[in-house]
Length: 223
Ligand code: 3PG
Image (cartoon, rainbow, N blue to C red; front, side, top):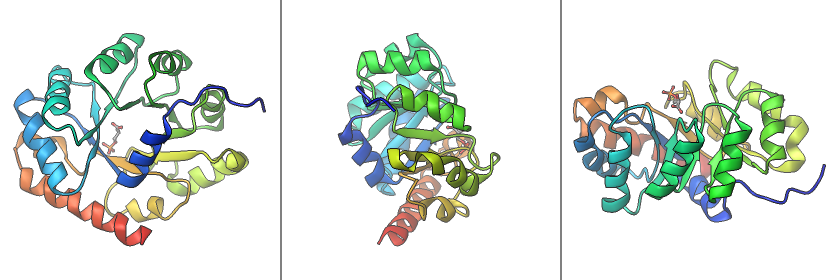
């Protein structure tokens, strides 16, 4: 294989995500929820988010988090278009991910200097991403495609590339250990930490509790 000239994610960001171990996937319906939500996550030790571009409130909510909660590592999810790549760069995104593996989006992220992890579910997806310099990949949808067993089999031929994966889709506190015990996993992601319904109900206490629970699990597994 040719040497990779460009890296799709900075070493600094790779370390931040690995240290975090958990990326909270957020669907924010109301801008007013952005600040208390970010604070509730931080109170539970979760400092890395994937704010999904699925609601009209997402961009305004992200701007508030960027300004008011600078200690939060601000990632964006559901980044599907070149214009969305540009938009999240303008907001000051630390990274972005997408459900699928679109070479156009990977290329635009690199052009913009945006750390990016495309979604992969097959060896073909992995090879498209690797060819474009990606070494951290979103494994999506993790649970329904076979969980960690599927990932370990699929990633075996690429071991020498030292790829790291972020499983998303169906992950929760019960199945988190199966992922976190694998050397392939840099961080687990999911919406269970701050479920949309909890955000809508402004149940910041439960969100902090969920955040603490997964952080404690990560520390126990990694110690
Ligand atoms: C994502 O948005 O990245 C995933 O859909 C999160 O999946 P989950 O809601 O099953 O955690």
